[in-house]
Amino acid sequence: MAEFPTTVAAAKAAYEHGMPTVMGAPNVLRGNSHNGNASGRELVGRGLVTALASDYLPSGLLSAALLLAEEGLAPLPAAVGLVTGGAAAVAGLPDRGRLEEGLRANAASGVPLSAFAGVIAVDGVPTEALTSWLDTGRCWHTVAGQPSRTARAAVRSWTARR
Amino acid sequence: MSLLRPQRHIADAWWRVATRAARIRILSTSCLETVLVAEGSTDAFADAGSDTHRIVDLAAAMVTVPAAGGAVIDVRGRPLELDPDLTRRWSGVVAATPRLAEELAETIRGTEER
Image (cartoon, rainbow over all chains, first blue to last red; front, side):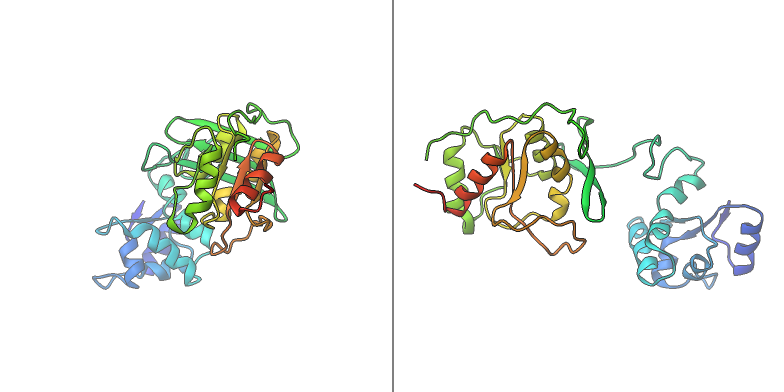
């Protein structure tokens, strides 16, 4: 792994040798290296970076990824990949870090009732949904047009009282 | 049924719903509350007219709840659209049957026949 290559030439050489390259998120956020080395933005723009590290700013990862996308240095999925799948690849953990079938789930949530809900839409029409109650691991997966595998919804306690 | 928490400006509508349901739950986790309707654990879940819901709160329910026989509608009849503009808001009504969804929306609007 090439950790914080100090010049564009070094980053290119690492790339040519198939080495993953890590740059610092603070470098990206500042716009340049704090000690005059290569610019993270420039290396990302040249497609030479595998992952961003938080370095001395633990909160900087996501903001650096979003900034790279905003400034057009990388498409949003590639920019976010620098702090997710890219980071996992650098750490030698290819079984996580990407939203793909068969990979390990890897999410963090704050409170016991937190849930994740995702939907796939085709031309604006929702066709498939997955909701997960993170604290319990219960999942509800539904494909439009197919019989639901969840228990059927039912009215039990709504009253006619007005 | 479950409701979003009461807010002063929609207190009347919130109370109209609360007095008709046998039990009220406030879980403050919309995505989960919609699947609890789909699986039959609760009868319904609603935003009593505060226009708090973004489409991300309701998008999965648009598949899961109808597949279980229920319905997802907006209190004011606005179509639910998968639009990346997250400034758009709805007052979602998720119910075990389409008829209950309509009845709840009427109750929240205060337009039901008496």
